Length: 316
Image 1 (tube, rainbow, N blue to C red):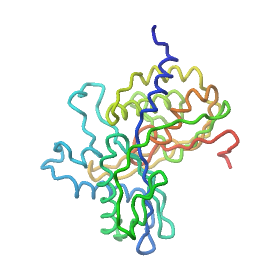
Image 2: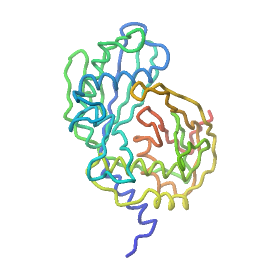
Image 3: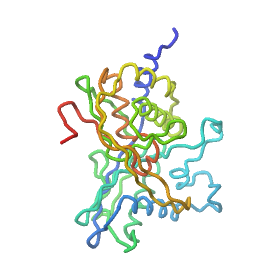
Image 4: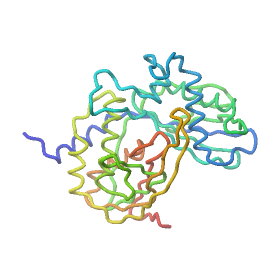
């Protein structure tokens, strides 16, 4: 039997039940008054630099040794058997969600995907080292008070004990009631179409970006191979889902990359949309998207969105 586009969408949804991840929430307490300004930018920059210093012993930054923790997380090399034209880079196997520091406290959510789960001890020790050394111009020091993962306490700063042998969590979607749902983009959605940044939200581009990111995360970081095409599945979704309301707008945001020695554009689209149609057909994809983020610059926290039910109102 020849597979139809609907079969591909159903096959895509079925494969998501094999997606392995784990989320970690770090509660930190600053020694002084905390830190002013863009804490999220400072944290990401310090994390990359500290991880590189403590785990990378490669002679060349352009050619990392096999198994280099920094390279696996931040450089994500293309495996030899996949070095073909359609792959120019590999998505990072993690995302950050960082709250702004308030009253000397902050929370950092880090999600690791698939094979990257083995690196959580290095991630935890890197953040502890960052706190001891301090971050930002003032060298603001902090303590990691606790780390939780899916309701389990895996680190207590008072005890100093760490539990890092948790297994990955399988993704299980839940039904979404009704035929409409709201998506609210909490951080910039940075999408590209035909090598150009998308300034206005486009439903087809959104789903294709989400599917492409998911496909690549599975291909490079999970233990199975996706049997569906992002473009084909997006075409089917376009026929059953409509954009009913668009309250998004573009914002400008940038950061300086010491590694690349240049200013990087990390802006994009923020705000809310309402989509309608056969919502449960795309519910698994939408729900997993809240975990993996969508679009470009996801390692900087971009592309994070929240699903809101019909009775919620993102205008309030």
